[in-house]
Amino acid sequence: MPRSLALLAAIMLAGCSHTDTQPRPASRAVVLVSGLASTAPYTAPDAACAIGLPAGTDHTPLREHLVRKGYSVFTAPAMAGPGQVRDTNGYGAFASCPSPLPAAVTVDSTGSIDLAGEHLARFIDWLHTEKKIDEVDLVGHSMGGLYSRAAIRTLRATGSPVLVRSLTTIGTPWQGSYLANYAEGSIALSACQGDPFCESQMKGYARDIAAVHLSGSARELAQPYLTGAKGWNTFQAGVLDDIPVTLIGGNRYTHPDPADAAVWPNDGVVELRSALARDVDDSVLPHRRCRIVDDTHSDYVSMITNLKRDTALTWDPRVLDAVTAAIDGAPKALDGPNRDGC
Image (cartoon, rainbow, N blue to C red; front, side, top):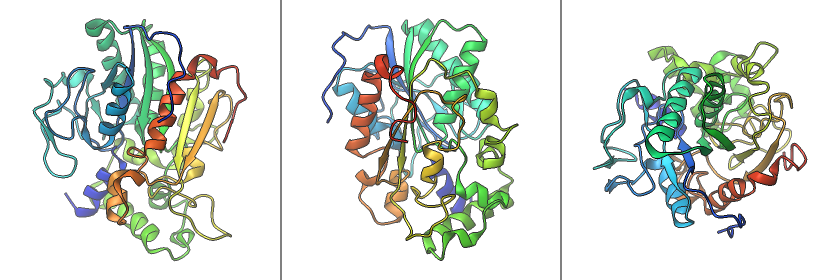
């Protein structure tokens, strides 16, 4: 695998007091969903990997945070390709994990958004059958937020008995990623305004697309696919009508004005405008609240730019608390204004 492709896969991978005064029923769970080209193990509230990161690089801190607060947490298994999840080495290594689940309920994080969503929906139905889960709060990192939306549509279309109580997206490219937009040709390299890291990210993504003909959700990251009158977002209208959504975006990397909002500010992978779905119509996203944190997209991005691990969206305690608040506040969220903080 080219070094730049490995970088792409890694960067896209993937307290506030408790306010819900009602006891959490045993039939309710939080499901954590990974992003593009990620490999993540299946974990349960009482079972995680014994070697390395217990729930993978993106989910470990959030899982541990929520478990400490008494939530029932599952991580959806994800594989960079079809098949079951196995132990992995290298960056974000994990081993000695719970028994891998069948490929049919494992998210193919290199497949199309809708295919990934279909497998995620199967996993959620599996939780209902095997773990007696009737309600879920979905938390998706990066493309995991889009996979979650596709899963919600599939659950409804198939008459699933599981209720999706809330959706929280972390660094999710609701409108695409500036990296994919550059590769697709809708953004010029000049939009980086001479920033070396921005240019290297754009060139690396475009080189990987050209070299290995990435398909599936890697090619669906561009804005033209997701937005517009016939874009993917349009076909999600109605799916989130009764589901409160919290969008968390990072703005670690900035540029002095005038700066192109199609790129700046960003988290190293996704521009803030996209992470907060600012151009997504209210018919698609009628109940949104937003939170902005000065973080990077992932701990890998923090590492390659010489930042501490907790500057990453998936490791920052502020984000962990924001996720907790979003889940706890779900019952009253539909009563508030749309685009709160967005």
